[in-house]
Length: 299
Ligand SMILES: [Zn+2]
Image 1 (tube, rainbow, N blue to C red):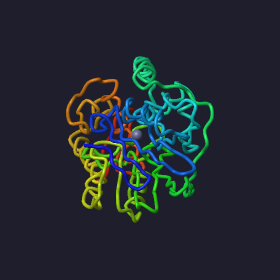
Image 2 (spheres, rainbow, N blue to C red):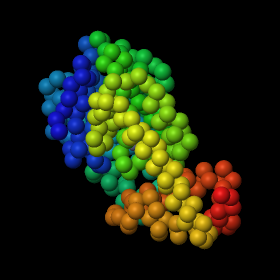
Image 3 (cartoon, rainbow, N blue to C red):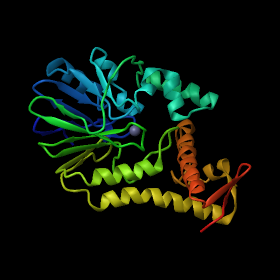
Image 4 (cartoon, helix red, strand yellow):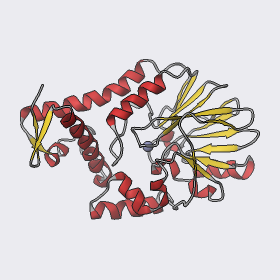
């Protein structure tokens, strides 16, 4: 699959079809400003772009490592990001804290990975993008849409003239959404998805996998949201059999489906997503926590 041009917007397909640790990127060649959004598609593509066509500013849809992995190629360019998603980009400890990684061994694993694999370099300043802000890049305007849930400050972008909507990490994959960080939220994820669905776009772009929809994704929107409820139902069915601790529920691999390596990534992810669900079920009065044991108390 190749890159695609929509007016002044170029969809830059990521390596390995934009699967983690890669992501699809977007390049906008405005007459006033040339922007790269989420520089994570491919080192080669991004280096060529920088040296040939030029990049003035770098925008991030959110702070995740698979979206900033080649940010270091643009260390002279100003960074634009939402205010809420900036703190994790200011230092390694802030980044680990935002993920909620507390375990000493996991912190060491991720510290090394963020530096070596994702070339993390702290940023000490950024220009903040606000919800509803309309930015004129010259011959093209873009509306920033706050879509929290995946991260607290996740942004999507709507290019009005071209009818192109960048959903970023509401990526419409069959796995479903991620909301496992310290400040992620399932409820906000659902609200953001519903907000995005209503935008009158003609082309929908995401940062991973298929990445490009030239017709309304239709049932794919529902399937994506439904993965949330399917996960929840699996947890409830598990607790129906017997009350369990978070460790016991994690060991059942209800979300990823099977044990996957590296554990520092997948086991952490499984546990983090489960925890969000269990917190939500507790708020809804469906599950209670007694000492360390989760109990289903309502159908
Ligand atoms: Zn992400």
